[in-house]
Image: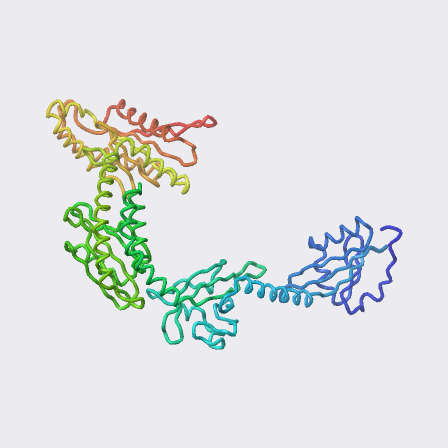
Length: 552
């Protein structure tokens, strides 16, 4: 140590009533007071080592506050470390109380600041278990402050569909002007406008929330009455404009469901559409669907022309109407609301019919659009995906998922052997029948989620998700063995009808492109044909510039 450092008399250290310790130059404890055991046990922590570095660098005493973790919590010490001839002398003062008092003061000031910034009718705070621990003297929605203290916030939030609705009193994020319906002491509903901030401890664990509320029940009731009157005049014009301007039909119906529900003060809305002679399918939805109105959706399949009706359960009341195009029912619209918010009046029913008439046109447009899309993606004869849809739409989508899941897949090419002789001997109608039989045969050999396509002529392709090489080979072998039934449809006995199959396994780690995968599967199929037809071959593994591989 430097010459300026003092020599320490150590006799007093052991008997000191405060934490003090003498360390040698290697940071080993030579002598310490009884209360210095926690400090000495933490000598090699980074926080203390940084103090020693300062003392050594400047050859002068250094002061620093440190935070040590104990079984009972955090303890704060104000440390003074001074150099001496014998090593280092450490003095410590337990400043935990001062630190906690400062933290409490800062928390109190922050609480005041938060409440001032979002001041409103009454202020509140909840604890980690959701109970109110503070309510301003004004009280809230008919409750006195003492009635809310220690009361669970969930107990006053309005229950919907046997589930709790949004409870902003326990929000984990900052909310501004969030509306929530609560129950007054007399059981009547009230709407509160809530602004709040969440509270977290130093370990980022949520410990509660505090905020302010304003009772806007009267305002909301007046707004709802005005909104209904205004929206009833504007809704049809808005839906017609949406149908005219919206490019994506599904977005159009979603906007219509949203607008209709809000205009009629409904909790939710669903729009249904009928495809051909099938049952109704849901095409757009707004809001959560109560479980106890499921029976209504079944009833809609038997809905009659010009029918508008009401459906009532213990907690909900729904209104529904058929949608029509050229006097033919092509769907339905259904809206529901809680009974506590009132029933459906005559004006609501008339408006529901008017909306349904407009949606009938929209449903027909969507059906026409789907028919065009389907024709552009499928093979006209077999109904399977065509080459473009298979390679440009389905394979990229499946491969993206496989790369994420890191799962292999198989691309299988299937080509009819001696199909030309069938057309020559029996005509193209018989050839078409064979192609349809092959379609049915291939669909029998794939799982739900796999994809089949007709690439053109007598060439088909299968895409099998999540399958390894052995399982894919087994699937190909099964196709070959089961395809013997095709021989009875042969054009000539010398050239029997059958299939040749090429298999290429896709490895999501390989970096292989779709074009490279297609090329391998195609090459494997032609290898099977060159080998005598009526069998399958597996493509050589994909080879990158930095690797080599052998086929089977």
